[in-house]
Length: 164
Image 1 (cartoon, rainbow, N blue to C red):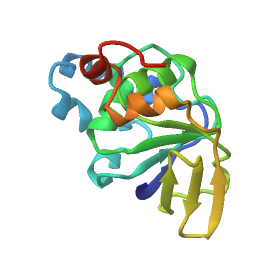
Image 2: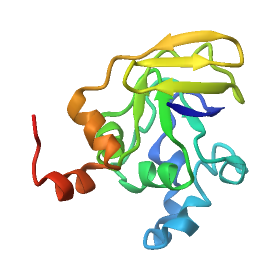
Image 3: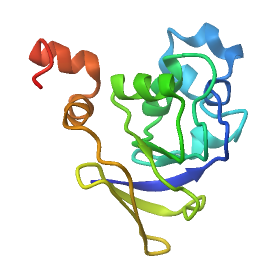
Image 4: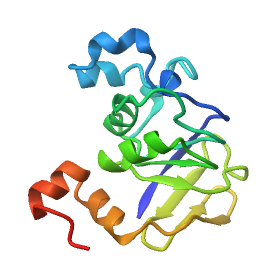
């Protein structure tokens, strides 16, 4: 069970919003790079996040370039999952490969600061703040196993290949 606060953003949050290109020189210094996560959308975001919190987006979350560092910094600052109405394909795959759950669901009833509880296995989101229950498409078993191991590389290192 994942538990944390919702940080709500709108539609079309690009990889440039997630980690602005002007910080590309920090790619080899992930802790420093992570301090700038979502900076253009909310300058204080990285300082407010506590481990377990959630990013909640609208449509087309993660559009733009295929920067692997976008989901990497989201995970590095302690975000436990991204919830959005729709997500760019490359962002989705990069996130799963790096061990960051991305859940496609209707995010309209989630407000900034709401307390959420997410059950990845059951496909449910309980909004503790407004007592609303949401569902998302169940995550395929292989993806759950990849997420459980912390990403694709740790999964492959442990198992050697996919056990389908």
